View (cartoon, rainbow, N blue to C red):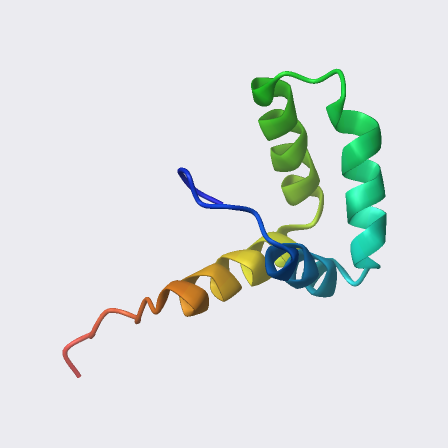
Length: 77
């Protein structure tokens, strides 16, 4: 997620599918860990999780591009 966009249940569902986990597991884990963390700590934790599973991160980025309607650049062929 970037900027001021809202984080919806559709986003959680997409993340859960990419990671192969139950969406409610994500919500429970987020609720458990977010209470005492600063925004920087939350971001750092998300980046650590993404580094542990680069394919999940790639899937999320791909889904995000598809949702926004981004198209690949024309290579001139």
